Every structure is written in structure tokens, then in C-alpha cells.
Image 1 (tube, one colour):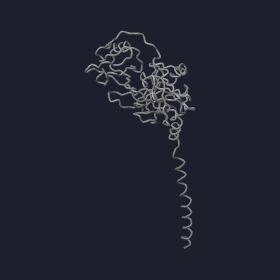
Image 2 (cartoon, rainbow, N blue to C red):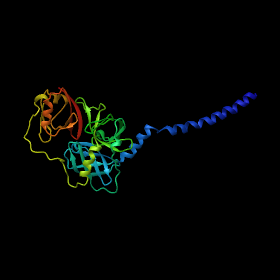
Image 3 (cartoon, rainbow, N blue to C red):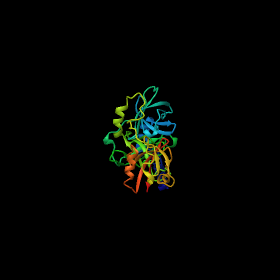
Image 4 (tube, rainbow, N blue to C red):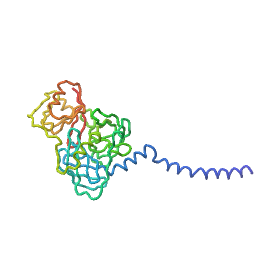
Length: 319
């Protein structure tokens, strides 16, 4: 009897002291480590990310000054003089295109009738951009504004452009690539799609903010629309500068596809009239002669950057 009497109070005391310890432990570990960083970056950066709508489609952008300066991709605005911009709160603005740089695929917009100060994204310096670091992308893929993906910075190209495995899809173009401090390190530009499906295989590209800083500084005070950063000299019409090896006829000024030859590599990868050729193997194209010179080397394959209706993708072409 004495043993039973002593055991019962001891068991009761043990249960009473152990039970409350479970809830505090769970509460303290819900959002820690990497998960907490993810949440903090999104909460800090997402108010400065916008959705851009043009007649050609949707894209994304970053507010970089509280009075309404927006950085995005040149292919997103696709020659427009004015676009519609929606902020994360649902506020809508008309915006004027004040500068573009096709080679870097950059554009600056100025929001009209801004009241008060807008949330902004800080620009990273060189030390804030390192291969192997975690990166974060926010944008409006397929019109789904505020979509958030994460990955790592996989590579920095010789021209400074960034490669990442963070999921980037149509509509993310022009939106921010961020570091873990919530700083803008790149403007999302393209995905590598080996075929005509346009699917994401985990290789995305962004223009480094280091390459964008001079463009911003030179054009942030522009007031009139500037649809061409660099005037092009008049060139004779070159209907098909690369022969049947690729199989397209191009506009010599805009590098827009006019015709696609049947059973050509261009048809196999899904090119169609209206597409714009932006780059080969990551190198921006300025005129058809550059494409002709590349194809004369008879490469076995190349990565072609193509813009279509405000979206851009990298497509693997095999010969």
C-alpha cells in the first residue's frame, strides 16, 4: 500500500510537468532557419514588385524609386509607349516608357500620378552577387501576381549575366531576382527550353543589376518616351541572310521573323512569324549579319533567345 501511495503522486507530477513543454517547442520552431529567411525576403520585397500589362501580354517589374521609377525587361514592353502597371496592393497606374536598351534587355518606366511614396527594392553591389548564394524570384507567371520561387545562383557569365535554377516562367520576365537581403541582383529575362514546348527545365537567366546601374543612372530623369536606346543605321532588306540552315526570313531592322521555311530547323523548334530573335548563345544580336556570320561556322547546335508576345525563352537548336 505504501508503494502504491507513493507511486501515484509521482506519476501525476511527471505528466503535469511534461505536457506543457510540447506546445512551446512547436511554436518556437515553426519558422526558423531557411524558412524564416524565405518569409522575410518575400515580406520585404514583394510590395515593390509590379505586374505589367501590354497589348502583347503580361510581365513583371521592380519599383526602384519611391516616386514611381520601374525597372523591367525591354522585351516585356515590346515597343509600347505606355503600359498598365498594377502594384501588390492592387493599385493601378498608367506608365510611360522612358528608356530602353535592347542589347541588355532593359527598360525604365515612369508611373503617372503617384500619390505618396512607394515601396522600393534596393540594388545590390558586387559583393551581394556570388555564385552559390540563395536567390529568390518574384513575379507574375501566367498572370499569377506575387508568385515566389527560390533557388541558387548557378553561374555568372563573362558578360555579367546571371544563371539560376529558381523557377522562372512566362510572366516572370522583367521581375526581380533577389539575394537573401532582399536586394535586387538581376532582372529576370529568359528560360532555357530545349524544344518547342516552352517548359522550364531549371535553367533561367537574368540581366545583372551591375549591368543595369549605368542604364538607370543615365535615364532615370528622362521625361519623354525613348523607345530605342541606340539608333540603327538603315540597312538593305535581307530576306533570308542565313539560307536554309536555320530557315527563316528576317526583318533586318528588328530581327523579327517574317517567314519560316517548311521542314527547317526553325520550324522544328516552333518559330513562327512575329517572333523576334534576341541573342545566340547569350550574345545579343544587333543585325542579321551577326547571325549569318555565326551560322557560317556551321555549328552543330546553338541556343537561340526568342521573344514572343512579351515573353522570352531560350531554345536549343540542333543542326
